[in-house]
Every structure is written in C-alpha cells, then in structure tokens.
Image 1 (tube, rainbow, N blue to C red):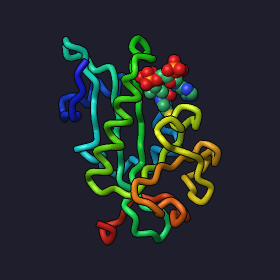
Image 2: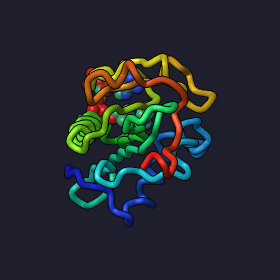
Image 3: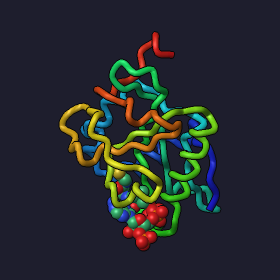
Length: 166
Ligand SMILES: CC(C)(COP(=O)(O)OP(=O)(O)OC[C@H]1O[C@@H](n2cnc3c(N)ncnc32)[C@H](O)[C@@H]1OP(=O)(O)O)[C@@H](O)C(=O)NCCC(=O)NCCS
C-alpha cells in the first residue's frame, strides 16, 4: 500500500469509492453543503493506493470558518476505505497523517460529522457550541483542537470562508 497526495486524475475513481461507501444519495448529506462551492486543501487530500495503482482509500479536508471567529478550521471528510481493505489501519493512517500535516500547516482545529467511538482514538470529541447545516445530529459533531484554547472559543454556525476570510 502506498499513500500519496490526491491527483486530478484520481477524482473519478475516488467518486466511485465514495458512492460505494456512502451510497448514491451521499451528496444530499448536510455536510456536502460545506463542500459544494468550496475547494479541498490540496496538501491534505490523500489517497491510499494498492501496488497496481487502484485507489482503496481517500480522505479530504476543507477550509471552513465558525460563526464570526477568525480561526483557521478544517472540515474532515469524506473518508472512505474500500470494504475489502477495511480494518487494515488505512483509515487510521489517513486520519493521523492528515492531522499531523494540518498541524504543520498551522490549521487551528478540525471538525467532522461522524461516530465518536471511531474518532475519539485520534482525540476528537463532541462539541456542542458549533452548528452544522441541518439536519445534523449534534451528537455527531466532533472537534479536535490543534492549537491550545481554540476549541472553547469555537461558537456558531460552520460556514464556507468568504473572500474576506482569506
Ligand atoms: C470508517 C472507515 C473509514 C475506517 O477505515 P478503516 O481503514 O477500516 O479503519 P482502521 O483499519 O484504521 O480501523 C478499524 C477499526 O475501527 C473500527 N471502526 C470502524 N468504523 C467504526 C465506527 N463507525 N465506529 C466505531 N468503530 C469503528 C473497526 O471496528 C476497527 O476496530 P478494531 O481495530 O478494534 O478491529 C471505513 O470503515 C469506511 O470507509 N467506512 C465506510 C464509510 C464511512 O463510514 N466513513 C466515515 C464516515 S464518518
């Protein structure tokens, strides 16, 4: 298995992987409202490839802002691993590598919508002060702060950064 930064030519195969993992209605999920019209961060978008080049894992991170806060926050997702390779540590590698790189690049916190029992091992926990576009189960909104003290100041609605935020 090798891990690399996603290339433009990987996108078709990634879409198939995501359709298989989440179903064809996945773009109706509320978190997609923060992706459509937004651009993933190139350096943090990674794929896992088999030796023959087939993509079996993918992760993306998107820039977001919370309320009127200036903090540089990332939205993690989607992450998917092909069902034939689940449980081999690929998802954990993609998340850990993304978190380390995000820290190096001075991002201040990461948000996601997901299962706390899986993401808690990477340090994510439920954050009640942040709102995602409805309908999002508040118990699945998770946060990992990358710079100390950011988490307690994150309050409000998650939104796509505007030109004045950049
Ligand atoms: C979630 C996912 C990315 C994990 O990738 P992976 O490569 O299989 O994960 P790892 O091998 O690093 O970790 C596997 C462990 O996580 C556990 N796990 C996987 N999904 C879990 C979940 N939703 N909740 C709790 N634990 C979970 C597995 O049971 C396994 O536990 P074990 O190590 O004790 O056996 C992968 O299962 C997947 O693509 N699922 C479908 C898409 C999806 O649900 N994406 C996440 C959306 S929030």
